[in-house]
Image (cartoon, rainbow over all chains, first blue to last red; front, side, top):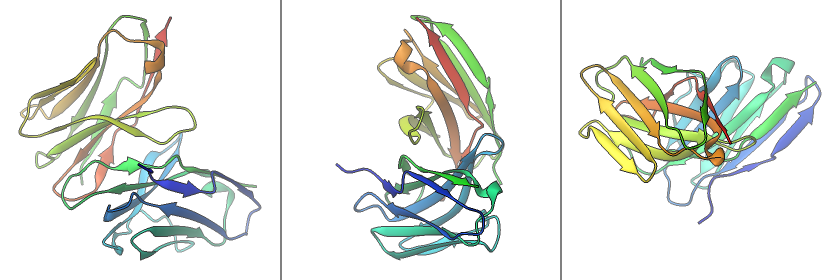
Length: 114
Length: 111
């Protein structure tokens, strides 16, 4: 079975540019999560969706960050404008059902902002 | 919100020895506790989980124990192998979907 698919795997761009990260959750999963991982702060939840609806975006660091889930099989995380401190690995995860269920992670996008 | 603490941050063991990683949580309402293994360049992969109505769960060389009274849970890996070397994360979840992760333990198994 296909797992969570993220693209691109690596992104290097200059400060001020728009960055779009993409995620395809596991088919049939109805919850989707965006995380950021850094050495200093570990795994941080940015936002999560349930049935394509954003439930909690309190982890989104600033207005420069936005996330959408237009349908059950696709989500984007956008940073505009990007800054060097946004450099991190961004993970998408999905889970099935409501309540406490295992989250399945993609292999992440390693983002470097120069 | 929930606060999860994880210890130790680094752990080195000889191949064949056991490894134990411990986590504590703050919210007694937490009811689901997964453990993840993260290898270099990969996303976290679920290796075992336990729910609050169970005290212990085993899967081959991996086991997890939960003490609800003390609000702590532990990962036990027996007969460690070099391929067990990775970063391990614990997490706790309340009734909703959100996970609260520990800060990770870097495990090195020395051949």
